[in-house]
Amino acid sequence: MIAARPLSRMLAAALAALSLASLPARAQEHGAPTPAAEHADIITPHITDSRHLELPYWKPPFAVEVELPHWTPVHVGGFELDLSPTKHVVMLLLAATLVGLMLVLVARAHVRHTRESGHPRGAAAGIEAMVLYMRNEVIVPNVGPHGNAFVPFLLSLFFFILAANLLGLIPYGATATGNISVTATLALMTFFVVEIAGIRAQGWGYLNTFIYWPHDMGLVMRIPMSLIISPIELVGKIARPFALAIRLFANMTAGHIVVLAFISLIFFFSSLLSIAPFLMAIAIMMLELFVAFLQAFIFTLLASVFIGLVREAHH
Picture: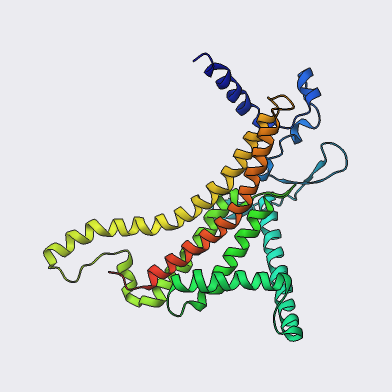
């Protein structure tokens, strides 16, 4: 119990210093904030939204804030809609631009290499392998017969989420997928695609996906069963996009918080002991790189499964 007290105090101090992880030692000794103090946190800017961008700068703290334009809100009825860009909006636009440029350039390289040597090379071969794997092993088997029409949408989801995840791991970047509004919008788009796919595949039979009406029962049992099961079906429909949004948001946020905790511990150990949390932070960053790919894969996989389920005959 005596040994536990210093440990608990150390952990409490580490958590209290999360936002001051890289504050210069001189400022901490004198107890006075420095101009760099507000820029000291190197992790939370990656997961929090703001009205400014952080760009590289050659003087300490090696970052400069650039304010984003603020537009006059748009009034729609009694609602006020602020369409001013934020850091996460910029990151989403950057992710979409990078994905578009990459795929166009890779497609052109694929055509050129195939014409010259009969097969793609380099990045074109790597992207082709990734696309074919996602199409043949993930999307089409789960979407079901005639599922090629959904391949462009699901591949776009995969590459866009992957690019947005990776932008949060580079210096001066931000993880837009660590914003619940972003993941909720992606989930809502997927929800509409799923429901439209169900309507096109089942016609009027689509009503059975949220109104349970057992045709093999008598009317006396049919009505109470419908009143009991239909709300459960409706909750299941709502739970699917909710699960997509929360899973992506939580996983992309949690990794940055863990890295921040380990970096904070560096400042509470001696120079020799600080190597351990430093190595752990590097290990977590490597794990974050894997998670960036994994979460894009899981989001695409679940979207494919949901589309496949709703296209099948219900009950």
